[in-house]
Length: 231
View (cartoon, rainbow, N blue to C red):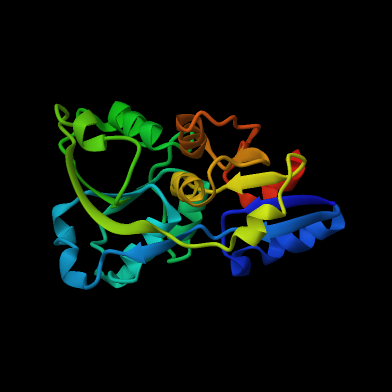
């Protein structure tokens, strides 16, 4: 039986586990990170009437933001931009519409394609972001008519995983890394993986490459259940 380790908590992987069982694949949860909200109270969110757009580049950003800001507090004129489909699903779970989404689910493309479309307009955007990001949108928009603002809504914190779970993995098995922070946390705890590596998307692939590790598979859509199509 092939083992597939996924850097998520067990309760997030039940659907995948059931599908994998039919293919004789064993799912091993490796929750090497946890999400910590940095919006401890609603006062940290600025006055939203000042902004034309909200930008989200992860579902975690969406959920930590709306844990402090209810949908009813949003100005009816404000629009929402998301990096990709999973982030869009998180926004739609609050019965809100998506007004902009780039052609590829990558932070760089989110801001570049938005700028190409709206650069001749004087707009105020608020980016709800993680503590660590891979693309410097503030620098990119520094000379644009689009005015950049940000709040850090969450951070990924390293979470200890029992080494016995990792010891189950051989070079015939796989690890699906679901965010750049999970790559860092895994390396800090366990060093170089023995198993073949799968990246959920481009930013995670870049994090794997930064350690001089080889990415064997990159998912064409950042959906965890899709990984079974590659194994």
